[in-house]
Amino acid sequence: MPKMLHTGQVIIDLVMAVDELPQIGGDVLAQSAAFEAGGGFNVMAAAARNGLPVVYLGRHGTGRFGDLARQAMHAEGIHIGIAEPAQRDTGLCVALTDASAERSFISYIGAEGEVSVADLNSVAAEDGDYAYVSGYSLLHAGKGQALVDWTLALPASVNVVFDPGPLVDSPDTPLMQALLPRIDVWTSNGVEALRFTGAADIAQALDRLVEYLPGNVLMVVRDGPQGCWIQQRGERRHVPGFAVQAVDSNGAGDAHAGVFVAGLAQGLPAFEAARRANAAAALAVTRWGPATAPGTAEVDALIHKTFSA
Image (tube, rainbow, N blue to C red; front, side, top):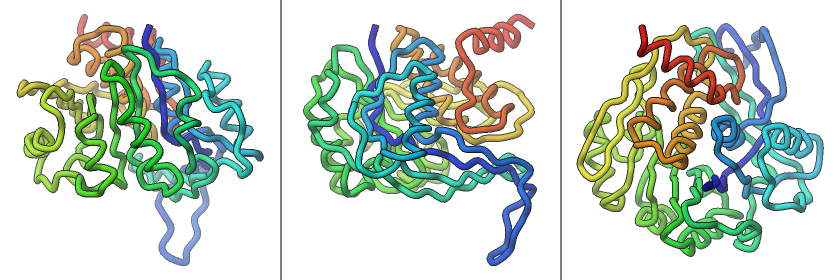
């Protein structure tokens, strides 16, 4: 079976729930606080819980946060491809979720912000594998170029999945220009797609993405509770979402991406993979915390409940 080679960043989230964010210079009391593995861990956990073998091909640190990251990955059955920890600790993200279920982040990059081509070659990429590339990685001076070089050297039989994230806002940087022709699967939320393309709506964003990406690329753009849009070779389809009561949107997009790739790797058509991803994201927002993706049985149950009613 194919595997996911996740080249992004596992960091530790300090997750806090607040009624509202403080004003500048102000203070608020949080209802809860906890340290959780986050960042790329969320995508990997979602994929692993839905039957896809996963390898983490990012750096991990020496210290309390690196220990937490490794413990979380081991608990999910995620293989750590780069065996030797770096000489600095894993980074930290403060994740604040307010009463509207929206979240705000402040991140500090640690050991995960560096990688070499030799590191990335620690585990062989095989036919049918999915190499997951995060836009965050392109912003790190100690990682971006090595990651793009490694990605471009992959065999054509390895599927490259690109997730731009919230900070990659243009196709015009040298690293992005180099990577664009190699992308097989694009996964983002609507805001990210609009920012990247300068479009006014998702339909226009999909039209513009076609101009930048290879002709056979599979695009999935999430549209919140409405579900997502998929497009490949000129065929565009809306995949409806699932009605739930959201309490925390943190990690929902990651759950969607991980379950979508797991579905593709298991041979599902794009529409079915997207429907499962929508169900996973819907379940994820009903729970507090970053890595709240459900497993296969829960996804199956929600789909069966919805479509057998």
